[in-house]
Image (cartoon, rainbow, N blue to C red):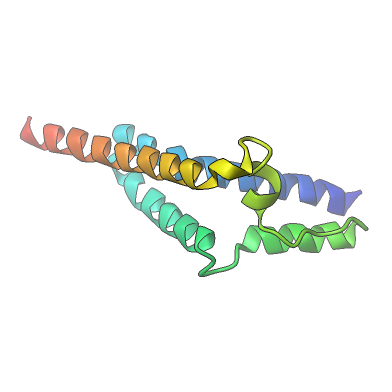
Length: 120
């Protein structure tokens, strides 16, 4: 029971991190210093998507799944729970571009509001 609960907690953390990577830059519009943790998270997200590093949450989830008697998964979190579930797999590159565009827009907005605040 405990490891199954841990799997659920890790899944929630995974989705929260994914949401933060895509949308977290908008928090910096209100709290400008929030741009730096978001830049770190976005960089980490890029490294994971490009397979430069392994996600520790995926490792932890697979570990907890094995302890609870469930099978782990070979593919990454996004490949398992997002691609083909939230959007068709053929739109993977499109969705990556959309996510990158949302991050870029959030950063440009942060830059705009920061410049505007410095002028006044």
